[in-house]
Length: 180
Image (cartoon, rainbow, N blue to C red; front, side, top):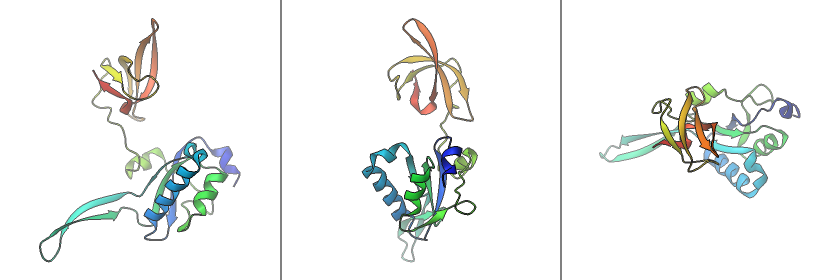
């Protein structure tokens, strides 16, 4: 398993296979493990079981909201894959393994993660180059600047912030800014 460390380039979405009906239990268990072992919060970032909600009507005409899992028996985990995280996830009750050949997990590509809606793409269409914006999240909260560049692929914007008499470009997620 040590080849994880050599190939690792940051957090990616991995898919764990579970017994049918164990998806939410596995998700809750992973979240509790991360909560109890603070060192894992830098390695395991998010856990999702994608669902679709629909409204059905029963025989008596009563409406009922029903949640259906989009991918039964699968849990999506955004994490840094290494020996420790592989071992932790693999040994949770209800997990049968990771998706990938043999025992080697294969991460989802960014396009696949967006396509199956586990990763939300920031709305960057509402911004234009030259717009005045305020930074609302991150280490520059409260600073203002102008948008210098927009990346539709990554959802990042480059904001030109004037600080200490100098202009500096800062790359931010589109969720971290708002129009003035």
